[in-house]
Image (cartoon, rainbow, N blue to C red):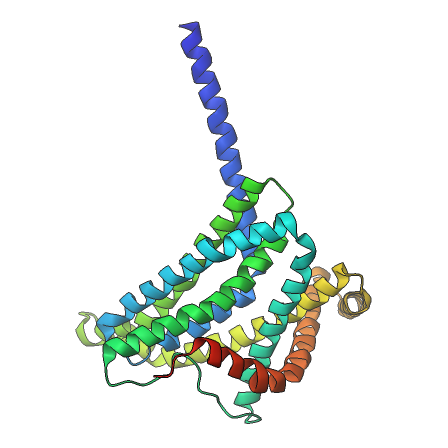
Length: 320
């Protein structure tokens, strides 16, 4: 009997350790995932265009197909690559972060330049038109998964840099948790956004109460403005996160001037205003990171459009 009790005590102790490990993994994953907020918002803002024009009953299957491809991108390709970098080439992480940050700055600046009429809109993947709906669905899904690979690479690299140095398996489980949590959050949000107008239309036409019908009408009318707001927030987040990544990576590589200058300016502005100094410092720092990200992005737009985009299209787009 005493042996059985000792065994139960050991099992309970192991369970407590396992539970603590799970808590650590989830906590680290949530913290690391929050660092990738800009790329996540961009992912959620970009994806709805890939289901534009489809019949309502095909929207969720297409989103599910893209979400499954995103999960494969993260778990099958990017997670092993990230672990290999962390354990065998950690020196490569800051340059890769800077590359991802530069891409975010380019994407954000390109959207602003197009909105201001400074550049023409280029034909992006996911905007193809075909008479065959099945062929169009195939092309849209493939284009979305390719675009997701870039965004997922940014997300996983940012998350990897945010994870405290630990054991191989702790890093692996944390990155896997980040991959699952972010994919569910992004594509769950996309599904809600895409179907919101259908839900609102159903409420407006079929609800029994006038309040519910008016609510449905309000949802339908609000969706275009919400999608516009999501694009604006996503663009701002890309510039903020992209600029922040580059400044912090330069700081880690020994080039401290931009990091120190922004910190000192933010502290000076916050102290001059008073009040919630910590919150003001964050706002000023994020604003200056975003301004730097926009300036860098505008410098990269000509190179991206004339060099990178044609190479990408030649390598990955099929002639259809």
